[in-house]
Length: 269
Image (cartoon, rainbow, N blue to C red):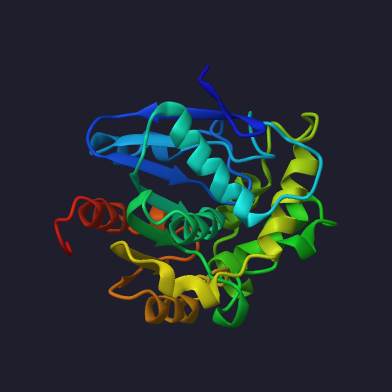
């Protein structure tokens, strides 16, 4: 299995496909062992794609100490250095979009193009939903709490009218086959602590690479108005909304092709 020494940690990664280099930075709780994931979709058909487990998650090292968003960005750079990449296109989804913002600000020479999906800048620009406040809940309680927030169409009335689908969503969101692994709860908590402190709002103007900001029209985690605020701060950025909530990339079949087209420099599809 591919591991890379990246600074003070060992990072588990997978690399797939051929074409322009593309670094994919995953969201909260991301673990490459959970399939299907982005590597099973259309993206690797167009790019030499690198995905990895972030510190505290999956098979990557889980040091038991506070993490910072700057560290997550440095992890990405250190992983690139370890495999011989000097620059790359970047897709950051949700928490990964927060890391991608830090990466593009701190290491502008590294990021050739950027897609920020269902994410937030924090600070005065607006933060994503405070997941760190839910750590006392069971996985099922958290799933039931978050479903109508993740997609605001999935309210109580919808849940009653679509009981089977709702319970399937609960089971999917609550499932964690690796929940009992040593360090898993701690690492996930450390990630949420770092996420709570994320704030790039006053620095977004430093992002100079071509940038696509995209979100779901019904996302209650990374709000549509927050996407609009980010677009107003990142010079020359494009803004696209898709039919879905926080998982719009799975809900709207137009989303991934639009991202791929942008990253390949083909313009709007």
